[in-house]
Length: 221
Image (cartoon, rainbow, N blue to C red; front, side):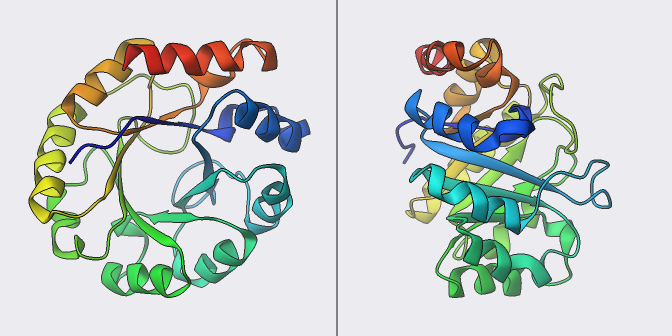
């Protein structure tokens, strides 16, 4: 069953010179999750942050830390991100040879486990592990860069995943990341998503605008 909409600002669009302040600001502005994009310069083109930064940010917010690992291999770093304070750890099926084992490891660390589907990654990649998944993230852009435009073909994928999740009877977050704004948010929610990752749409205008930006996203839903 589709859950209440949650907004997960991506700190990829924050001011990296003052990340702690930015996390506190979006927390106060009404963020539900803090979305943390981890990039290694190998699996995706850019390099962002690692476990040490997650650990440094943890004292700045009690909100759910939603870590999206765009790294390969992911397995050697799962424990470090769990210990740093990530509440949800999501991986790409392409980031290692044994997705089932990776999800087991994340859950064994006491964290929620997510699977991320790139625009060209089929739903079949997650079907065999639905019993281990707490979150499915649909990438509505190709991962690696912020500020990209929403890929329309991912809307039917969200719809099919909603049906797949509902058929399990389990509570699984269905998250969308990429080009989410007040216009595309409505389409994502109508298709069945219940968590929206928004970077540019949240952080535009600076801290004084964050609450209105988040409110606008909720209003679109």
